[in-house]
Amino acid sequence: MNPSLFSPEGLAGVIFLILICVTMIGAIIATCTTRLIRSVSGLAVCFVGVAGLYYFLNSPFVAMMELLIYVGAVCVTIAFAIMLAEPDEAKQARKITGLSGGLAAICGGFFAYALAYAAVNGKWMTPAVKRVNDGSLKEIGLSLLTRYSMVFELVSIVLLIAIVGALVLAQSGRDKA
Amino acid sequence: MLTLSTHLNTYLVIGAVLFGFGIFGLVRRPSLIGMLISVELVLSGASVNFMAFNHFLAPDPTVGQIITLFIMAIAAAEAAIALSIVLAVYRNYKSIETEDLVELKG
Image (cartoon, rainbow over all chains, first blue to last red; front, side, top):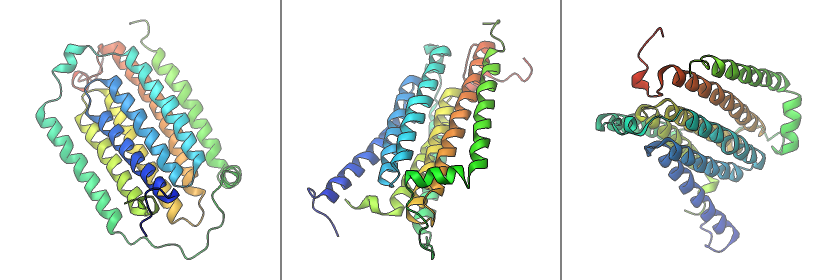
């Protein structure tokens, strides 16, 4: 069952391990650095790893969307916000006490352990029915425009309201600055 | 070790660890933008879980992908709104640290 290192399956396994490492290192950088701009870079690295995991899960379209939306849009937006609202350095230094870090580690570790325990020990049953389609990009498009068309339209309205709301919120108090 | 990508549990544990990192950052970060970054980690942990179940267990393998796309859209909207709130807060308080935001009526 264990493929050799230089077979295609073995190389895919090595790439998968690298992707896991990239994801985890990105998450560590995103949460543990002091400066926010490094944290955003770590977030981008983490999302690149997650996109690779999606590719291994047989959905290259979602992987591309992850790269486009998260790495290309969300991280850049957060970087702009950091540039606009940069907290001064002296203020940052006095924060992060030992107690807060320990408490945070306990909380995060508890949640991660509980979820992983439930996931590993759960009895996941494969469904009795056969797969109705292959989950390709064509099938996603058909589902989006037939069964999920209502949700699709609602999401577009949510995005429109988010754009207008972001403009209104950012505009208020502009004269005070 | 090299066949890890064919097991459901691998992805579920990765999703759980991403979620745990997100909670860790949420509690630890003193600033609003840092907390927003952690929330993005939590959301991506949830997305990884959806995609894993979609690939291994779901009878209709488009459902999880579509849910993940919707999560991305909601996360983008949430990031835009949260960042504009952060900017408005910064204009009023000249700070984005959560400890400084203690006034209720400005």
